[in-house]
Length: 387
Image (cartoon, rainbow, N blue to C red; front, side, top):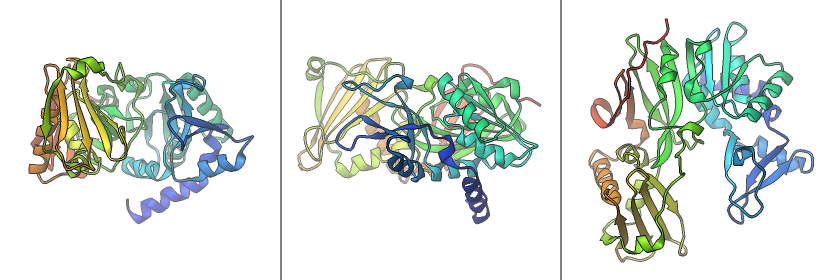
């Protein structure tokens, strides 16, 4: 981000207060264990204000809007993103006065307000939110602050064709592997798309794509991001794990992977993004310190084939780690092969990766499009972009 761009967005952040878009009740992580605690603007205004003013994400909804479960599992389902990351994403999008912008994932409405001020009175902002309650709250917040933005309730992965074509499209939720074809179909030639991108192996990068006149979209990855998924891009079963009897009967082996290897395989600033791109339909779950400090359990699974691998890694012990694998795919072997590929290609971080989408394929590449990391065939040709 240039100094002038940073200064321009900083001025907007001061003009459009985040606090005006945060609900009265937010949720903070429980420091003593998993779960969340409600913080109310009315009953604990000091704590609420500290959380909202911090350069950190603010969880604004849990459990898809269902009540907090006192004795059950709770999970975040919407948030206001960390302001410094919001600034980076807006700078990557680079909207200009007078442009039409589509935002995927309205959330609180704060991002839409920032975009509206940026494009000015001659521009237009459409923002789409899948959750009806969140969409209505954002409408009220935007109206209360005098911001004219069109809030649509619907599935963001389908975009909003009624308002197309757009000069810019920005997603505030992560896509899983494939960029929705509707987004590029609704983007004007010469336009730009910015979205968090990830795989089931791990979220981790910001993707910036520019659309050429011939309908080809190409761009690069940057940064280290962990965003909630588009709801239509979440895994249908949120993972799969065999029972302990099945795991006990799995093939057992030892691996020469050590703690430093795990750091490179799991760190999103190191190998995680590239390795994940080379592992089709493989989900990773990391259970830190499961059996004590430094004694971790890593699980890999493929829902479609019911393949599974579990690595028991005690980084405090020089003994080899134990790996168990079952199912038609040897998932740990695949992960290790992807790690070897990454290492042999100079240990690239996300900033050395790019992505190109044509009418029939999506390809992640390393440094230049000639070095293919992985190609996805697309089911149907994307329609020509609107004129």
